Length: 335
Image 1 (tube, rainbow, N blue to C red):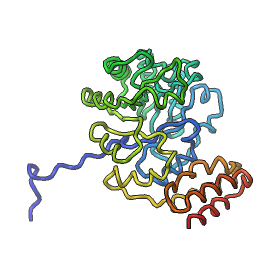
Image 2: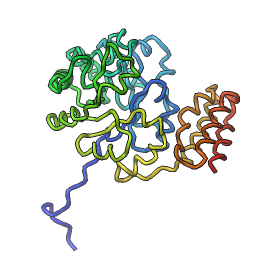
Image 3: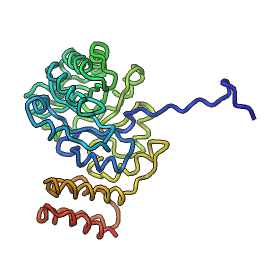
Image 4: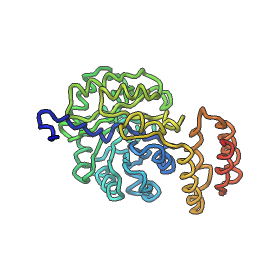
């Protein structure tokens, strides 16, 4: 039998975008312990750090902020800042530490971030964001990406959002936009309230992808079910999951099988056993157990024994903060 001619050979299946499935940067959640567990559950997920400010890297404990396990790759560092040169230096530090991507936060609505003149308030200054992206791109060889809202305060229209993207892409050279499809109210609403109001507008991201196919567009906001993620991937390059990834961390066990052709469902118990060994090593280095059990509390949500498992971890870890056997005992409650 002869090989099929070029005209009849099936077209190769395109590789999925590196941003096909991402776990959002979340303060007090996506630390290195959480990310290590997430990697046990998904080989393909793109992981993000908590936001790290430029000041914390340029004047603080760099190792505390940037240390990560090699198994976490691909892993991105999210930076907060608004000074182009400080961001460039912080990006250089992150790239030197081995991060696969540097992400600029243009979406956080907290008062502390606003007082530092960065986060979501930067959406009012697209030319400055473009300048920041340019400086970061010139400093590193890894991708520099932007995570933004669809607008702030009285920015209501798609055209305003599109203008922001065009300036940052065309003047700053940004090629990847992670779009949190909820506008941020910087005045009058707390960060917690900004998680639920105003309403989500995912059509801003999908329209952006149609109109700017040269850009990589990742949809963030309100994605909690795998079917919704799969549907979104028909219109954008990737999805990013936030609260659902810690409220039910076991969800990640199904991601590779559901969203990647070569993936398979992860064994949650095997992931926990690997994490248990990691936790024991961390305790030997001085990390306290309550910090380490936080990522695994919801791993078996909805499974037999999950309530007893979670109660045991929650009650015993403060009392026995240097005893990894607490995790072994919790595993027995699942059996």
